[in-house]
Length: 308
Image (tube, rainbow, N blue to C red; front, side, top):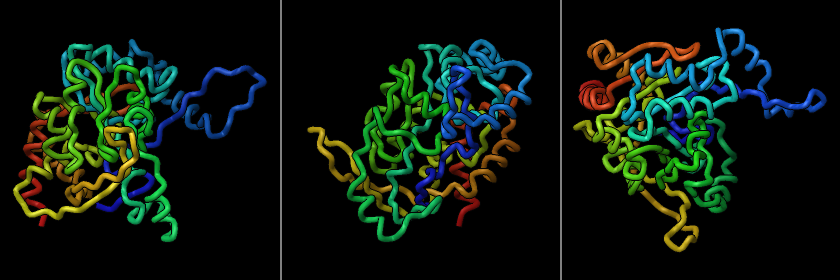
C-alpha cells in the first residue's frame, strides 16, 4: 500500500457539498465555508428537500431495518440537496436502525500514515522527519477523519458515538453493540481479525453504500486477511496516548493493503451473487445494501484466485 496524505485507501472519494448556514443578508460567506455553486447544482437535481423523514423512508424502502448492524460508506454529494446537511443523514440512519441496532462508519485518519510515502500531495523530503516527530498524538475524541466525507466526520462527533483507538484505521459506532464493536481494536493488522470489521462480520452485518463504489468497500480488506496466500507485511508507527496520557510512538504491523482491484472483485461478486445485493436510490444517488459476510467470504476466495 502507498501511504497518502490526502486520504487513506478507503476514503470516500466524492467531494461533499457543503450546505449554507442561514446568515443575515449583509453577512459575507467565507469561501471555504460554503460551496455555493455545488449547492445550487444539488438543488437543481433534487425533486424535494431531503429531510430526516424523507431519508428515513428511503432507507427503509432500500431494506435497512431496525436492529441491523449497518456499516455505512457514503458520499454526501451523491444524495442531492440535504436540508441542514450531514446531521440530517446521520439522524435518519439512527432513526431507522434504532438503538436496538448498531450504526458503524469508517473514521480513518490517513494523516497518521508515514509521510515519506504520501502522494496526494507529497511533501518535501526534508519535512518528513519533522512531521513524524511533531505530530500530536491520535486522540479518538478529537482527531478528525481524513477523506471520509462529511457524513462520517459528523457521525464521529455525536455524543453517544464511540470511536476505536487505532491511529489510522479507526471506526465510529453508535447503538446497541457500539462499545463492543470498537473495543480493543488491535494496533497490529488494523483491518483484520481484531478490528471492528470482524466484529460487524460476527454480527452478520450489512454494508450500505451511498453513492460509493467497491473502491471504498473496507470490508474487502478483511477478505485480504482471510485469503490463504502469501502477503507482504509492512510496519507503521504513529503517536498515541499511553495509559498515563503521555504521547508515545506506537509501532504496529499491517498487511501491505491494496484496494486497486476492489472494483473488479466487487463487480464479480454482484454478478455471481445478485441475491446478496439490493439496489435502489436514496435522494438523487445510487445506493446498495450488501451482505457483508457474503462479500468477505467471496473476496477471500477471489483474492486467492486472482492475485499473484
